[in-house]
Length: 113
Length: 113
Image (cartoon, rainbow over all chains, first blue to last red; front, side, top):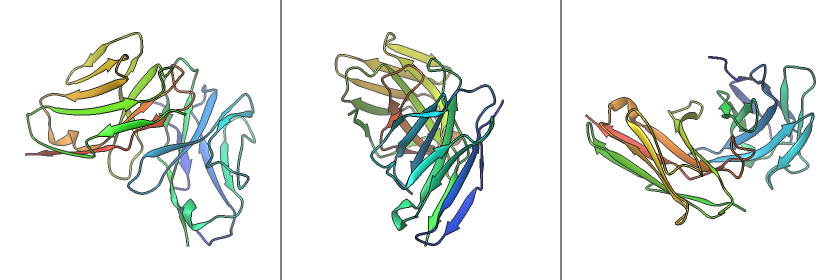
């Protein structure tokens, strides 16, 4: 079965540094998402992306966050100046159409020190 | 916005017994309700979903019921096995296929041999 892949699996960074989390969605999927999960808590929606633009974003997704689909395969999440509270598992997800199922990647564990 | 409440937060059952996890949602416009299973350190995996035009759906040992009037839905696992041990999340969305999933807090299910 095709999978959403994410790199790196773990990322450690210093507070204030920029990080880029990378995702390769399933190839024929058109809708892309980022979710995050703070340790021991529920999964939270960050942003959805379709047709090369953000379709919806949550309150968490402030000006420090941005997403990009720089080519036909990658989908990235950038955090410009990381804070301690950004430490979480970040999941990329993709979906072929709004009538189909959402597939999650394996996640990137971000630790901000 | 949508709010999803999930109970219980932890559940321990004997192998072979049934487990039931319940969720309530607040937005009557929600029409898609997936359930995800998450093993430690891994991605959420979709195990079953239900749409608002259906009251019940079953897949082998797993079933989901939906009561639109009461705005609650439940996951039922019968003949539980040790490999069912995981954290289970319910979610709700206004669009079939999840434009934006709102998750419950999760239930840690432990199957005792």
